Image (cartoon, rainbow, N blue to C red; front, top):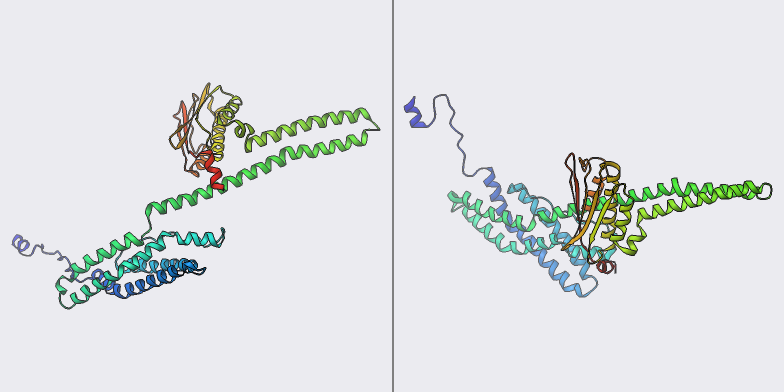
Length: 398
């Protein structure tokens, strides 16, 4: 038995491994891809030359730019066909790039600008342009090897196919970083829209349940006082006095609502004064330190204010702290906020204290939100926001 094992390499009762031919199915698919390179490269090159010559030459006219944009959209379809061919014949795992939004919400000019700046379309045109010489070379080598160099054809097919794979991966595959960034921005846009809708619903609810109800009662009370003015002046005077109190309460509720939307002190005096005013309403003594040599853009300033305001409310409601501090400073192109308290700790983003909403709001503007709150305390919340100068916001709107 030992001698048999030495001579055949297989023990009695074992099946020998299957013999694999050199030209297996995978190799034949690679050969088919290489032979199809010539007609596909001719089609792609002809399309590229037509688009560039026609669209480029006519850009001096009104019709040139739309034709070039349409050509870039067509190039996307050619790229889609080439990616499908690579997946089917080369076994590549290549993803489709993000499609262009077809809604023209910004008008025809905006849509044209977006299409003309499409990197996927331009990279596909470059792919079609450089493929012609490679298509001729790969087709010729593969076709000749089928009859002359067939013993080394599998190795030639693998090497030539690897060049094809590199071209597809380099020019037709989506950029991982770009695609990730697009997905993040789409998600952040949804968060911003949802947050704005929630804020509008809150304002509507506060107005309906608070100031509006009081004003309705006030109108009814003044109407009754008017009817009794001649018959019972004393009762009318009491009703007017009561209505006066309702007016004061309604005004206070409107002030609180306006402060929740955007406090006047923040607009007039900036973060230092606004955060100091918020700290006075906290049930815990708060030390506020704001070290800024300039005011950030109004949007960033507003987000910073509401972030600190929400965190101080959490301290008042949940922390059982004896002291707290707020520090705001600028580090290069970032606005940093740190809120600390010596409470019981245990704060979590998913703890139902509104911190998850704060994290989403900051993430929507490329900010960061970090909570360090071990059980037993202390709690340190650090927030980062991108710094934008106040003048830049006006230039963007302009």
